[in-house]
Image (cartoon, rainbow over all chains, first blue to last red; front, side):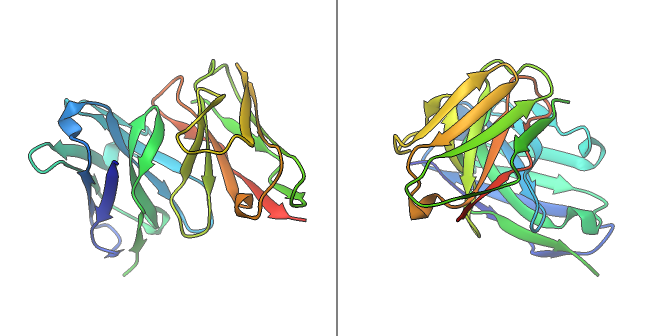
Length: 116
Length: 108
């Protein structure tokens, strides 16, 4: 069974960089599939952030592209998210997921609050 | 960007009855449409993909239909555990992957 677990700071100051890691178990990232990040502001809907193929090719939401970096570390079987220059609008639960177009396996999510 | 619009925003249905949720795409997404169920404090759970294929472990009371721009998720006989928020998502033309705004299914 594929399992994903997000980790990272729960509080980030405005203008700083949000950094999260997603550890994958039960499947080797290097074996295939897209992997990605989705976020959900409190009480709101789902927003796709970006995806990365096992080879390292990345696809970003145009609305976040200028601030976003998604990477994979196949040796650790994990993916990472970095979002720079954050504001309160970036406060959300951040999920990582295996994305073969649709997301068939999701992490439990981690709440990141942007506040001074 | 393909805009996904779900209706209604909130649907009130009694247990045991049928629920029909709708999702419309701003342009054709062929059958590249997924449905998710989300309960409070939980991650979304994949219900359907390819518009009409149930994901692993999803009960047969869930069914999906449609293609192009109009899609429907039907729950044939609502159980207590089915009351949740449901999202549709297109993956035909990305980036970006886009989600509908959600339909809240509540107990009548």
